[in-house]
Image 1: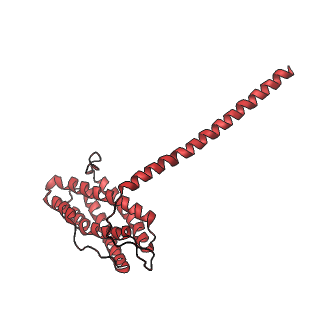
Image 2: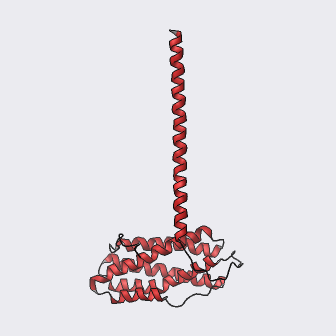
Image 3: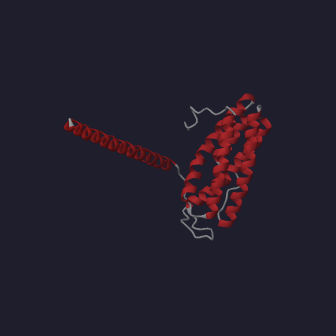
Length: 215
């Protein structure tokens, strides 16, 4: 009887030990898997974000090193305001729903601030900035100008939402990698503003998520 009890106790301890080991292995796997998946996802996401290299290399400033990526980011913030400010004003004036007019007002407020900040950063860091929308942006404004009646809201929402989605990745990349304190401050603010614009545009109901990343 004593032998049976002893064997039973030993078996119980063996099973318990096995369960503990299995639990530890499962926990380790659960911890490692998200890290691997996140690493792969982050790498893939980073590879899709690009910036324009002006060939100026990295220069020293009182705010820290200034890279080509930093300069391109400041220029793109300025460029965004040059077409999204008039686009927002159009939405305020032509929007047939409160959501579209509200999105327009949010765009105007956000890009008025970011435009000011980008100009300040450009002056402080010696970055030449554009003074008019580029060819693509002029084309988008032309599409909005040509949209009549009910066509305006989805045209506005699609064009602006797609543009914000593209720049959002660059904002995150710059915020992660820049060593320049002024550029980092601009990226911090741009992150908040761009996300608020994305949210407002989606609330208009004019964003087609099935075609959003088709071009």
